[in-house]
Image (cartoon, rainbow, N blue to C red; front, side):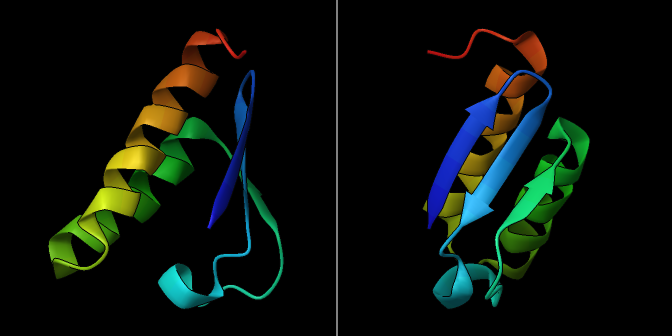
Length: 65
């Protein structure tokens, strides 16, 4: 899974193995957190879920490098 972060948005690419997504998806920070919470709740891919939460936080703050 590849995550690109821009101010106010997170783009997730190549996420078929983790999220079952074959296409790229661009989400708001809150939507990204929901995806992460769903993974955590299932106990699946918890490391990826933590990364998504961090990406959402960065996108929300706008401090993207």
